[in-house]
Amino acid sequence: MPGIENLIGKQSDVTDLKGIEAQNRFNYEFTRFIKTLADKDYPLVIFVDDLQWADASSLNLFKIIAGNRDIEYVLLVGGYRKNEVDENHALVKTLNELKEDHVPFEHMDLKDLAYVDVYNLVSGALLTTQENTSLLADIIYN
Image (cartoon, rainbow, N blue to C red; front, side, top):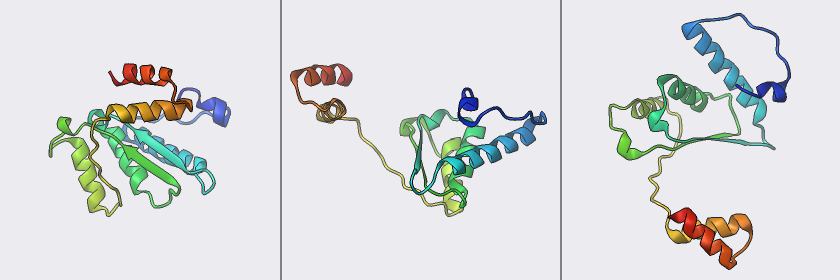
């Protein structure tokens, strides 16, 4: 992970692993990292977009994090384009596996943003309702 050394400091070298062993170590360490970051006072939200393009390893990590009962104060949010997945897609299979494992999650269908939604987001972010907000909202919406 580029730049992680700035956050956690220089780490000692580890044994070079290949294949599934390397993947398992990454999943284990990433899970430990998330547990370290999230606590009651500082909950963590992880948003992953475009899950329709995720590879098997990424979907597996998502499943591991979602199903890990030891991880608290973490909210996983995933976004994907429903029109790009069918019942045979790896993402749908992963979601079905989470259901089978009784991992609680909610599924929401979202609609496109209306102009007023974009305007409210822009004016809220800029803390203004002036004319320049309308022009910027027009540009963003279009």
